[in-house]
Image (tube, rainbow over all chains, first blue to last red; front, side):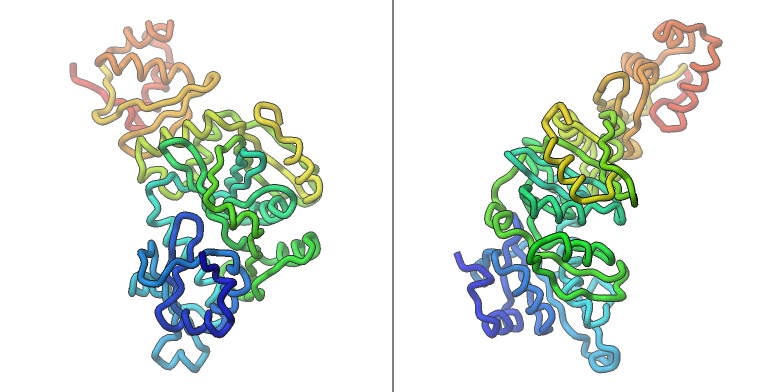
Length: 305
Length: 84
């Protein structure tokens, strides 16, 4: 199957500006159209390993990023994101075009994929067992996730955990990892030869950059995993790496608060989450040093952390 | 007399001494103790008065903790007062 990386820079730019790319990420196909150079650059940099579907095939989501046709095309230029032909989002500075694509795709999935219980959580896998990391912004979730997936764990997602109600499996959605502010420099130093999109400053999240997902994780995008752990990470300056057990009923409520569609799924959401809690050990995880965090995760065993 | 609020199915899961229960009316999930769950399960069999519920918990009908528990469950719309 054709991959995005098989296209030359010229072909990529041309396809994006014309009929669009039909990009496959996990189980979703997104049609992307844009003539904005930074979008083509970001896609070329971070999505080279991803399959492209044939044009005119079904796409779950249709996204177009364009410069507005008003004065803001030239004065303090902006970018507008169209989803299914409609502009639902506030225009952003043109320099934010690539992160806007990432945020827009997150929005599409989190507001539409209700076949799954969707958690705001990173999820990684090793030896067939997944660890789910639910956490609010600022807890170090994506930083920890980035460190793990470059040290033996497979990236299933850094942002959206999709749990299949029928069997409790987590569906992979390996996409670039969104890092913010100090985490960007931290991971540039911590990882060997990381591939980042250009850092974009002054977004509503501060400075953001996206880290390329490991190729192996992208190639194994159809390989689901059963969760074994729920880990609530919390970065705390100077803290030793410590796991603390969390009771299952409390874990249930905490994960529900980090879900996008728990209430919308009603009783089915409750049962899916309860089954997930049943099969997982739940822990709070306080840490400050990534090496210590990796060592702690290395020691994880089902039933005995 | 007390009864379950109409529509509550008491979908729940018990782990150790705690229970997670889905509130069909609010969409919330509550963590409940064993006494609260015992009262709810008793009311699933039908409306009951204070003496019967006190018996379930092996308490007396004038037990202040039982009164507070019923008030809490009512506030969560899990139960409601019943005329008969």
